[in-house]
Length: 384
Length: 109
Image (tube, rainbow over all chains, first blue to last red):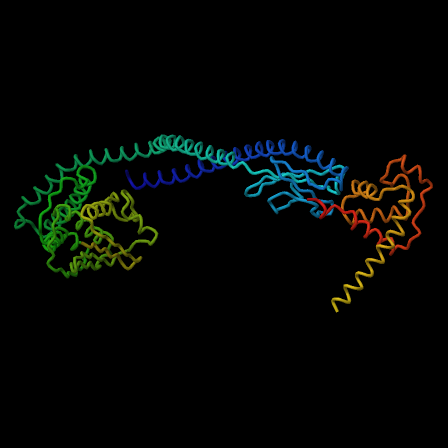
């Protein structure tokens, strides 16, 4: 999957999951509130009955006070009476949290209900009834919410997976079309490039005039550039770095060979090359490392000013390629390795080069660091 | 000092108690009015301590059958109702004593 696809999918899933979670939370809240209201109603009905019973008992005690002084009690509930000035007259309740604003409320352990008496038996205006809270009901609601939320999330995720597939299908098709086109084009340009290269080599340079020699050099440069593009396309669409054969070789020799390969191009742009190369033996596929070096050198040439400088160094297990070219904008630095991404239209290309470099770096677990400053140049460090 | 204050308080209480018996109990007993019953009837209507005391004070100063907490048959026996001739201060003290003697708070178990 391409980075752009991953990014699109990631964005889609973030939005989708936020939306799904919001819906689930909203539905759960409605469900919880509905259950809470139902529970409150059940409690209220029960406690209203207890309040009626307790009022009768208070009435009886009022009429027989002080012959009988025992406050009426019941195993099913506790109660308290308060006068109209909110002073406690008597209480058997456990909770001390008395609230005169809400006629049904919950504490950690108890449910409390109060009613206003029409006749102030024993001087009481407020009758409070307290019963233990049935936490099993709340736990059951929580369990149901958790279960339903989990099932809904699962269903939505499965649905999201199919939606995401539908969502990126057009993008995938476009990329596939582009890949197929490049594959076909790659096949088609192989033979003409080989013919051009072979014929260039067959030309007897001693018999050519100065002008003809210059023309041949230009053809050679064009053919080399085409060959580099061909190799990049082949790597991207046909090989992808599979089936590489690792051998031990000196990186310095390979770098020198690749500089020689680009020498005509370097000369044509009148670039100076500073070399500081130490022997450095590595175990890798030379063809892959050559692709890595070719792309880095090719960029250093392409995006350099005429008469600019390219510095290539190998030391402390690092390959450093630095140019004095046009540089890269800071905001583009993190998108450099994305396939088909190009930030400068002044030079040709498919936007494959640094993507190939990244693939090769990943194959050999190397580290790559690119720093750049506009109009000053770019520095690429590959660390083994 | 504490002992002195206690003695003054004791004397005042005894003096007031004597007054409550003289100014209230004596007359009500003579007329066959149970003070406990009137207290419980007033409590049923007026509830809290301050409300009770205010209402009773007002009733003692302006007694009418309509504002009485007792039954109509009971009130008929005492018509015309006469306002209390006691001073406001004394009436307040007597009502305080009445509340203390018959209040419910602290007397339930």
